Image 1 (cartoon, rainbow, N blue to C red):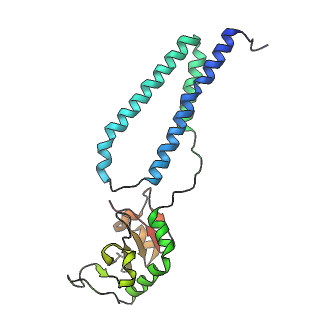
Image 2: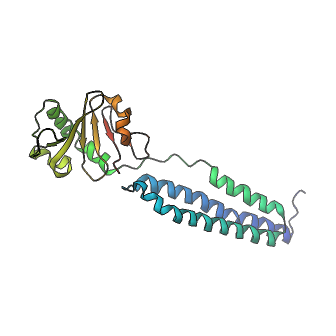
Length: 216
């Protein structure tokens, strides 16, 4: 027999199985962090740099705890193979791809789909130049929404400006920091001046002309 059922061997096998607990916890921790980043958003910008020492400290604590577990495993089993299994398990816990989970539905996203017809009606008013200018004059990018559309953007105003291509860009702010933006020419979203709508974790393409962007 390749494996003799002796008290020592049973003890080694039990210890080896138990050491997979921190590996599983590590993987679940990665999953929790990923889901938290997907659902929790905020206007942090470079404020994340303040949290870096906390993250580094947490990683250091985790590394120390894993090292302590490895030492305990070796002292109890006196076998290097147990340490190797533990090390391979930790690497697997760090590198194993996370499962594909449904994207979190952002409040602005749900709000857009619920009131999409009104959003599009406002854009039509903009294209027909039928929105009133604020007290500062029409040179200011804000336009005043009709009373029935006040709920679409904070303070009852939208931002109307030209893209580098000369096409219209209409920005709604139903909630703070995450505007819903309409691009008359969809490809304009890739222009450098619209970097808030490109390559960021929380950017969403809502439709051909519509994007949920980030504004730190």
